[in-house]
Every structure is written in structure tokens, then in C-alpha cells.
Length: 266
Image (tube, rainbow, N blue to C red; front, side):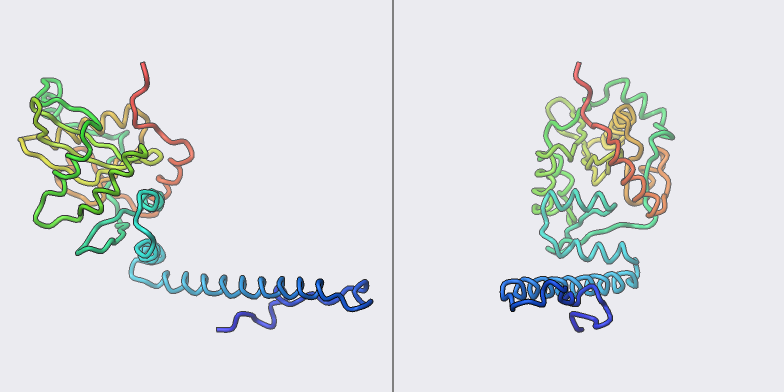
């Protein structure tokens, strides 16, 4: 691929002006040479980027699938995770490599239509477990990742703890006395909060955590809880499938007027 198209006048060196017809000016011609080289390199980069975009668009998942592949080549850090979430993507560790995903359709709970089953509401009112937020994020991540096969490797757990320090990741926890018996974690961005994983060591603990988190998010002005994939566990709370493009639009619009996860100060 050539750096310059002869027909692209934008990268050709400018014709000498009438005032340049005098004695030879070495510095001026060196400067013009640098400008020409910069335009040629910029043209080549733009052509290369367009070629990458066209290649990504014909992948099975389209341009978004190509974007997932590009994200996998970038450094894995809390900051990159946030940029991924802003595009509707989330990371998973598979056999030691980070892969990014953006399923279509997306499973979400629209909080305006949140339905909490009556039995779960009764258990919350009875105080079956003590429910709280952000008390022990490290323990919640470890419990969620304590499975024979898990995407939540030690590397990924460390990155999410970095997000917690930034104020983007949150946990919901259920305690029976001093014992952590259930929990979940996710990332709050704009007016969407994700649900990445849950665990339960006692009956109904994860369900109560999910309900408690949804009620809290609804009260704080969030629009969606992102469950990523459909399951009977979340369907009973009013989860629906949403087109990927609509989900990405909802994420983007939420960034303009974001909600705050933290409870208002008294």
C-alpha cells in the first residue's frame, strides 16, 4: 500500500508562491518537506484505519465484534475496563487470556418495571439476612470466583478491586451474624449498573442481594440493571432481552446525566 495517492491534493506540497521566486531559502524548503512528510504519513494512517474498520465490519459480530478484538490487544487495567463498559462490553478471563464480550441481545432489568417477588419482599422486611453494600469487596470477589471453572481469575479480581478504589465497582452483601453468606458485584456507569456475578452459601441469599441492589439503584435514579445473559433467576425480577444497539444507546445517554450509587448524605 502506498502512503500517498497522487490524486489526493491534500498531501501534495504547495506550489511556490510568487513571493518565493527570489533567492533560494533552505530553511523554508526544509519546513515544507517536513509538512509534506507529515501529511503523507497521516494519509497512510487514515487509510490503514479505514482498512481495519472495513475488516472488522465483516466479522460474525460486525463492527462491535471487531472492537471486542481490538480491546483484547490493549493493556488490561481498571481504566480500560471502564472504557470497555462505556461501549457495552465486559471482560472475561478464558485460559489465561482476556476476551471481551458484547452479547446481542442483552439481558437487562428495566428498573421502572422492576418486580420483586412477594416472598423475597417478605424476607427482606423480616431481616432474614443483614444486607449492606461495599463492606468487603475482596471477599465477595473471591467467593464469586471460587468455582471449578471461572472467568473471574485472580488477575481479573485485582482489576475489579482497582475499579472499587476508583468508586466504579460496588458489592452487595448478605450476612448471617459475622458470616458472609451471599453477595454480588457490578460496575455502575452512567445510569446503568451491571451484575457481573453472584454467590450464595445459604438459601435465598443471592436473591435477596439482587433485590436489595435493584431497589437501591432504582431509588438512586438508575435506569437499567445489566444481567448480560438471561437466566430464570433474573427473569422473575422482570428481566427482558434488549437489542445490543439499544443497550449501547442507553449506556451512552446515561453518561450525560449519570446517577450516583452512593446514598445521599444525611
